[in-house]
Length: 83
Image (cartoon, rainbow, N blue to C red; front, side, top):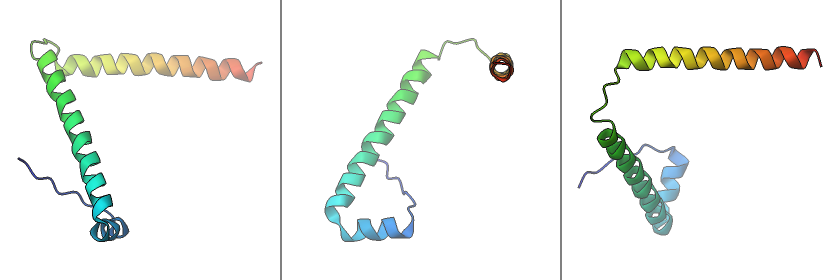
């Protein structure tokens, strides 16, 4: 089993120190959230293990998507000015 330390603001840490029920709830919620995220990452790793997509391809796709999103946003703003 792996242990993970989580830094919390002092008032939150104090609250957890003095309330064992709340501490247990927070521990269970954190454990479930971390587990869910890690399972998702493992599933994505397996799904993409045979992918031929390179980082350069992703960067290029990112540029294309952002450029198109900017055009769409800009056209909506311009259209709304003249209504």
